[in-house]
Image 1: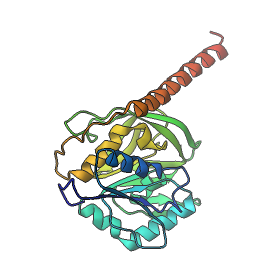
Image 2: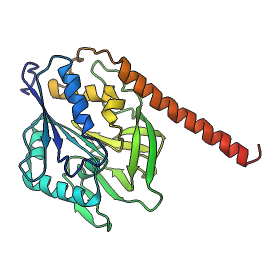
Image 3: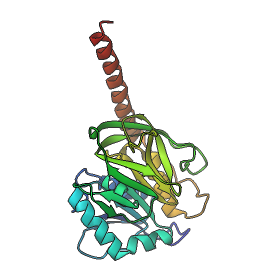
Image 4: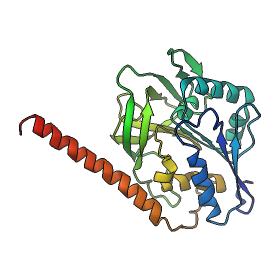
Length: 269
């Protein structure tokens, strides 16, 4: 899409779904494409498989996967260079789990050997020594996280995490959110995800953009309007999406209450 031109087609690329499609994160690209089309935008959704040059796109979505495919994906993307050049020209990149880790400076493989990431986020990831982070994750947006068009803060995030990595956010990036329930980055500071410019990473699956439509519209708004103060996108009837989000958050609350009751029962209270 040409800068500021809402009449040209928006291209959304799901990056290497054959390598990084383990957790269904390709659904994030589908969510973005549908929300653009429902607003009357021309949109092309591209399944950008590995083994061929990465296409030019306005938004790149990178999902989660296993250690070996993650290393292959990072190596290929570094050799190709298209994504790094696209970011310099204003493209939006959204990475989840392994896709989040490989956006950083380095990440580990299954033997804990460090591999070069794309360097698009100032983060580093190492293997954790404790239990794997698995379960529902809820996080409130950090104070300096991106805001919605018009200035309102994004609502809290909901999703499912499944990772063994511990990610540290460096000074050139900022944490995306603060953990309310779950593990998130796992470095002991209570943070979840990271962002810099128009590059965003998170450990949230779901797919996360189906559960968090305000975040989806933030990414779309960046792609449609590259200015520092993008205009709000036309509203949609999000009653079904809101119902899904509310149900998942309530399920977490019910689970938390159940854990409290169980602990009190075991303590004999």
